Image (cartoon, rainbow, N blue to C red):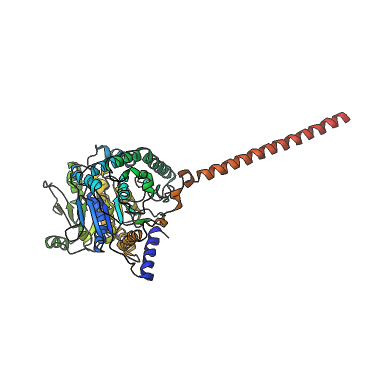
Length: 526
């Protein structure tokens, strides 16, 4: 039984046998000060649901939950850093270095930028509220776990990606590189020997260098920014990470690698999916009137298609102009290139509603987890053009499920794009596999949102739910890897082999001596 099934069935049984558990209105802090809009959009439905269920939520973030809910918003100043970065620039250092390398300094940098905002500094130093639970996003921002110590509350960490060695090591969560690809490895689930060798090296590098490089930086950040009454007696950063009560991670077995997890690791990808609503009238007329269907093209909320190199834009438009379908392209700039007759560009489209329209034939996307889960939910095939981060891994997994094709953005060619585009539109197997994956995603004993909320409230009810933690939290790394057992067995084996060798040699010498004596005696008789 996989981890998702276990958590869903456990939650369902709780509802079935006892009804909805009694939950009082709890005071919850959501500490999300980083300016990562795409991540916030993934967590936003969960935060809204907690408010709808009567909890008193305090949100520390540059982004809001909307004006229709009653909650406290500590608004963090925006610097619009995401829009200033051109992810399409091949010469950028981040596009040249492996992800596992640049996150060693990117994580601390993101954390510093977020914590250095006046609203955040003032909140950490002066807020005197009391909370029953603290949520924080761990986007390589481990020092933010310290906010839980300030309030003496159980901590839930929200991961905007799948489980990985970096996080798993603090919780004894299984992470076997023999069959679980490191999320930055770009390896498929069924790895060859060479890939397993590389995956093992990546997992080892990620774990060790994280401890040696990132953790010292986060300790310094913690000491600089988390200056509140009582901070002098707080535990070490690694101890606070081990004390996290619940990890809610952005993945789902329908897309990510199926792997075992400890009971306090809960998947949440899919909680933001909703049935499609009716399109705005002008867009509805376009989509309804597309005789051969529509192709939707969007690179998400962070990557701006309008910043693509001119030659890439020309390449894409040339191939898109050859198909019969109407193309809806999310284009963020006022400067619009010469477009084929079948291509329509706008600065924004209601993505969920377009994907959910029965006339949507194909989704061209960067491969972000939220976009991938939405297209799976609506059963639409995908052409992935991954740019950075975990996008490539999401695309590889989607291709392995049979409903996607994958081209790394910086390896894009007219032939590769055109061939894959036509294949996805002409081969019905992609649509069939997309619908199969959609059926799997939707087939749960309770909704994915109810499952996540159940376990968050479970942590509140049981004051941190420390009984969910494994004994792996209390042993050294060499004990977790059984290196002490291996060393002991190796020592015993060595001693046994040594004693056996000595006995054999002694016996052999005695036999040889006896034989020599016998030969000598026979010679004397002669």
